View 1 (spheres, rainbow, N blue to C red):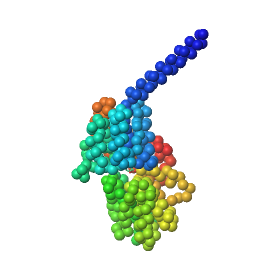
View 2: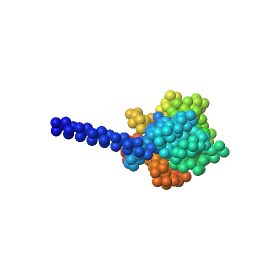
View 3: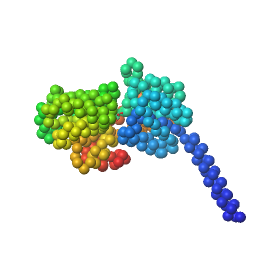
Amino acid sequence: MKKRILNLVVASAIAFCGVVSTVQAADKVKIGFLVKQPEEPWFQTEWRFADKAAKDNGFEVLKIAAPDGERTLAALDSLAANGAKGFVICTPDPRLGPSIVAKAKALNLKMVAVDDRFVGSDGKFMEDVPYLGMDAHAVGQQQGKLLMEEAKKRGWNLAETGAIINTFEELDTAHQRTSGSVESLIAAGFPKDNIFNAPNRTTDIPGSFDASNIMLTQHPDKKNWLVIGMNDNAVLGGIRATEGAGFKAANVIGIGINGTDVVAELEKKEVTGLYGSLLLSPNVHGYKTTMMVYDWVTKGVEPAKFTPISDATLIMRENFKQKLTEMGMM
Ligand code: FCA
């Protein structure tokens, strides 16, 4: 009998705890984190650190894929319906800015843009929307400078060297990076006539592979290639294209941007044309933007309109594991 009563007490205690924890979960502040390319390790890393911010501070992050305008706007409705108070977004298209702002206002959601800055109907940045991003031009300049240093180290004849520039002009951050890179090439004495723009249709490996491939076919006289692009995938596609065209790793130098999306490449047994990547701070991008929204909705602290993040570290085969581990990303 005693045992039965004890069991009953334990059971009701468990049930009570269950109710309490459900209530707590329902009460937790919810914040959305929408990204344009959830398959990219860059965005997965941002998500991971957004989750860390939530765990450290006892709130919840709703991670949502937003690959196009329709799904982005629908996601905002469902965020509001789920009781979210705000969101961070890397938009699939900066020109969606005005519709996203209007929808967020109507649903009473606070928002911070990350990585890709909103562009208004006048073609100018929507500077009223809080934004966190990197100094894209400076990072591009660094990419070009490092590529030239490595080409010089290899003793390449620049007259026989081509540079493929994987461009994506409709995205400002991409334009800033690739134009910065080209500036550095020219400043370091790279022949202008050997710089070939390869407009990418999509910002992924197939997009840069196709565009780079066309350039390689059009310039069969070049013996060496520099591969440039706005991020790791834009460079990786170019590297794959040089391999397809029969170039050896010794005749190709590519340096990515992001650092998150080259781990598998740098782990390959055989050295490839990908020399390294400029590792940015997706940990900071993910954690900080999430906290900006959280502090805004819970404490009324309005975030700065522009938060620049400027660190970029060159990672290569020799140091990538150590650097990524140091930053909690391995
Ligand atoms: C853009 C790119 C991402 C990353 C980010 C900082 O959104 O698409 O790969 O480089 O900027």
